[in-house]
Amino acid sequence: MLTVHGQLNTSADHAAQLWLAVPEPGMNAAGNDAPRKARRGLERAASLALLANTGAHTMLRRSLSHSGGCAAIAIAPAGCLAGVDIEATTPRDVHSIAQFAFAPDETREFRSLVEPEATARFYILWTLKEAFAKALGLPLLAALRDCSFARHGGRWTGDVPLAGPWQAIVFAPRPALTLAAVIIGAGGAMRDDWICREWPGTVAGSWRCLATLAGGDHRHQR
Image 1: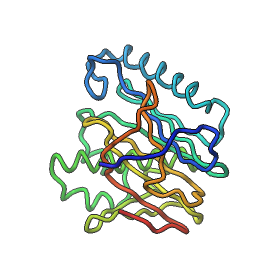
Image 2: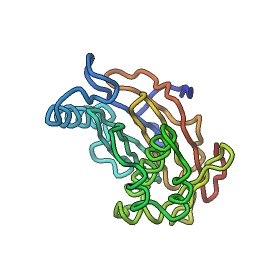
Image 3: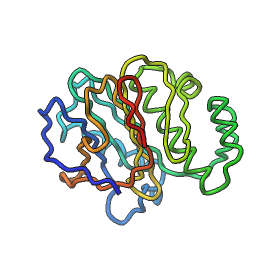
């Protein structure tokens, strides 16, 4: 488990913030007990609440995502860009999607995976790619092919179309949720510097960390 310390300060330009809005009580971890229309309503309300709670309406350095009745927002330090993606686990043919959407090296490795590892790996890769798509302003299809990630002996590495420094982190904040956040141009904020919070309220997020990656000037990967 990764516990992130520190008090929230939305005016602290040097903090990397990651917020999660969770479903209403009585629903499961990903909000999938509600009909699709109800989940969309929850996601919209959660997204608006996060924007209001963090004061990030007009920030260019923030990124927003929603899935399964939940919403997440990442706010990069001043002078940086953020990307975030949250995905609720749903039944799907992950091997077929990976064959079509992922980079060649990723698909070759993916063929050897069996459940539940295949689904877990799929969501780590997918959320990372979508978070980078948002941070870099890339079409999703381009990010799926051009941003590739691999795990070697427990260490994650990434190859992205970017010369400058970047950092990424992937969490499992709930058993059926995967959350990836990216900072482009990070100026020193590392794994333990993320301020993670859950809304409603400002409860510190103590979420299972699935992967950390860095590139450019940062080579701190786990």
